[in-house]
Amino acid sequence: MTWKKLIEVTEDVLGAGMSRRGGWSRDQLELLGVEWDDEHQTPFKGWKDKVLGRMCTQDEIEEFIYLKDKHLIRRRDKKANAKSQLSLF
View 1 (cartoon, rainbow, N blue to C red):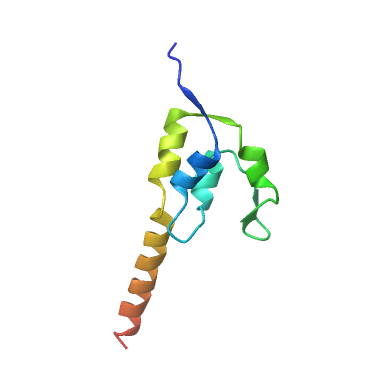
View 2 (tube, rainbow, N blue to C red; view 1 turned 90 degrees about the vertical axis):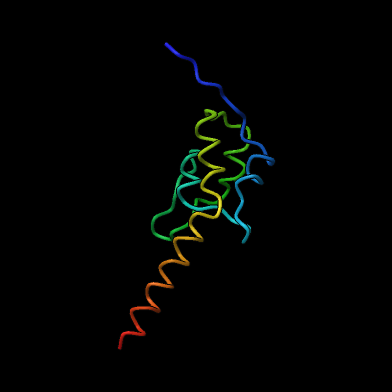
């Protein structure tokens, strides 16, 4: 059996994964175990207090940081595609 290194979720970890617009994607927060309110499309209130101090694997933390700004790129690509489709008409 191989042991995975565990890392504590701290303000520094959250800051390392924060997007340039000051937030996080759903994919990122779910990696940290944050529960999501599907009705309002937001994380449940108090998620940050619940996640701080939680232990996650090194792989989860690395993926959390890797996903930084990825949701912004997807959104930008969707807008660009929509504009290019509109220009066809």
